[in-house]
Length: 165
Image (cartoon, rainbow, N blue to C red):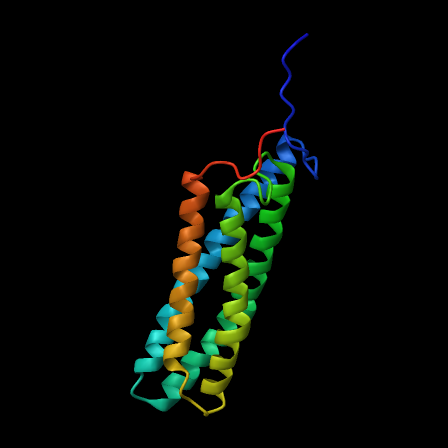
């Protein structure tokens, strides 16, 4: 009898070309989100240091545009394509710690946007103020988290959590 190794079940079966398309889109969305977050950070710093209040308000309006035009769509597209990849490859969602960590990082970036950055932008645009450093801190977190996710995707550290079947 042959020694047969049974791999884990793939919840979604994608052939080579669709899988490459999903991977390419995931990379585009993820790198785009990192770029958006870095740009957001630069504009947040500019707005916080603007000597003219009108320039500061315009900076925060630009942040709002960055968030709605790029940040929100790219965050969810990176999450969805990442899940598609995890479900259709040997990596799985909870099989390797680096994949699970990437999932948690993108979810945390979405939560920082919804719970920290959104309210901070609204406070600055409406004139309530006082959110300059919250916006900068949230943007720094996003850049660090997304850079970490990129490093994890390249190096894929750690052993499997779930035993081979």
